[in-house]
Each structure stands twice: as C-alpha cells, then as structure tokens.
Length: 197
Ligand code: SF4
Image (cartoon, rainbow, N blue to C red; front, side, top):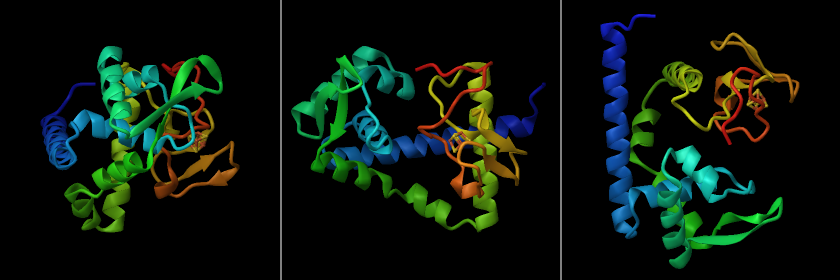
C-alpha cells in the first residue's frame, strides 16, 4: 500500500516523541548515574515481574546486540540494581531480578513528563491513540521489524475488530481498550507470525 504525506507526518511525530522519551530517560539516568539503556533494562525487567529475563531475551526485546545487553547487565549487577540467579527453568541460563534500588530506579524512570502530557488527553483520544499505536506495532511485527512482541492483536486468543470490540478467548472475557496487552505472558502467536524468542 502506498504511503501518504499523512503517514510521513505521523512517522515524524512518533520519531520526535521517541527522541523526547530518550532524552527524558537520559536526564533521569544522569541523576542516578545510569545510562538511558541501563534504565531501559531495569524497566524491562520490572515489566516482566516474576517472569525470568535473561540476556538473550533482553537483547531481542530491546533490539540491541547480546554483548551490549550483557555489558549493561554486568554493570547493573555490579552496582546492585540487579541480581543474577540461575534460571529455574533452564539450569544453563541466568534470570535477572531487580533489587530494591533497581525497583526504585525503574519506578522513578516511569514518572516522566511524557506520561503527564498523555494524562491531559481526553479518555477517547487516549483509547484511540492506544489502538492506533498497537496496530502500528502489529504492522511492524508482520514486516519483521519488531523482534519480540506479545500483544493482543497478534495473539491467537484475540477475538475482536481491533477497534471497539475485544475479547480474550483464553480468559473468556471481553476486554476494554485499557485492558488490551502489549506484553502478555499468555500470548500465543498466530501461526504465520511465530514469536522470535
Ligand atoms: S492471551 Fe494475552 S495477548 Fe492473548 S488475547 Fe489474551 S490477553 Fe491478549
């Protein structure tokens, strides 16, 4: 499908927001003597909760090389933000856990002016934005440009119109827009888009 000037305009706005998010993360990180990437690592481990996170998954999810992910993890372990434990599901691998200061740093990084700005939008605009952005992520999965994804729109348990009707067949429940997931542990990729993890 040919792209339009509107597509280019939206892409530019998204890039701009991405730059702002990165600059904000750098600023937050500097206050704690952490790099933007190290904060992103802490945020990712925090988002996964009790799910084991290893270096390989981190590298894939953040779309960085394994040596880069490994280096960030090493520094965060040395500085006491992360703990590295044997993965109970795979004795040859390690799983990362946040320490108390790691949790604090991850939480601090989330309280950004970007969130405050989104908070100013009417609820209908927030929901429309979330749906549109999830569809952009879905398209990036289909094109192979997004390596790790666990969003409802690419899940075989999803049933709905990707607009206003959403149901999870696994949970046997209708979902509101706010309940749609972008990193669901129960995600099962549809056959033509298997997970890359
Ligand atoms: S299993 Fe998770 S990702 Fe799949 S439809 Fe249900 S909530 Fe969404």
